[in-house]
Amino acid sequence: MFTEQLAAAADLGPDRADGRPSGSGTPTRIEPMKRRHIRGVVAIENQVNHKPWSESLFLGELRMPTSRIYNVALDAHRVLGFCGLMLITDEGHITNVAVDPTVRRLGIARRLLGKTIREAVDRGVTSLTLEVRMSNKGAQELYRRFGFFPGGIRHRYYAELNEDALIMWAHDVSTEEYAKRLEGLGV
Ligand SMILES: CC(C)(COP(=O)(O)OP(=O)(O)OC[C@H]1O[C@@H](n2cnc3c(N)ncnc32)[C@H](O)[C@@H]1OP(=O)(O)O)[C@@H](O)C(=O)NCCC(=O)NCCS
Image (cartoon, rainbow, N blue to C red):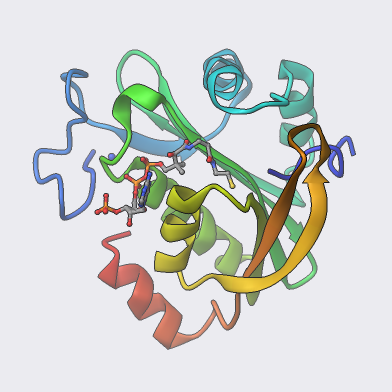
């Protein structure tokens, strides 16, 4: 999602009471991304993004903790997913979200986004934005559940795919009402 411009589950929520993604055998935790996670993060990135971020790009992001929030989902063995956000005054720009294809639809992205958004709100964010491929209806549905709505189009933003980006926004994320939305999502 946010690419060139940068180089500029102990439980899985209410729908997975056992807290275990199928096959992993261990609970999923959401934790701040550290240097040691980057290899696993890039392994996912390489599977899901047409222009995958490199290890050094992620490392650069981790070196800017005052303006970045990065979280990973982990089981005992590996990185299952990650989520990043850039802070620009009172705006939070979701930079990247991905989950290992073998553990999708288990609520991992929901938990990652929930934790990342809560941290951003704690750090003064009142609005959130992101870009998503026009054809990526699954991700758009995930964001819609977090209160994002379409706010514009960036034409040929993904030039190598010849695809437009849908810009999405979620406003008033520091309000009680939004906190209730997060609670309703179980995050
Ligand atoms: C988009 C992505 C991060 C979702 O991860 P996930 O862990 O499978 O998502 P979750 O299980 O937390 O989904 C939460 C909700 O989002 C929505 N959702 C997620 N994936 C969806 C899909 N493929 N189709 C429709 N709705 C979807 C659903 O409402 C889902 O709730 P439900 O499973 O109870 O119906 C994952 O598919 C992925 O990594 N895709 C490739 C990278 C990507 O597109 N990133 C976003 C870039 S903008």
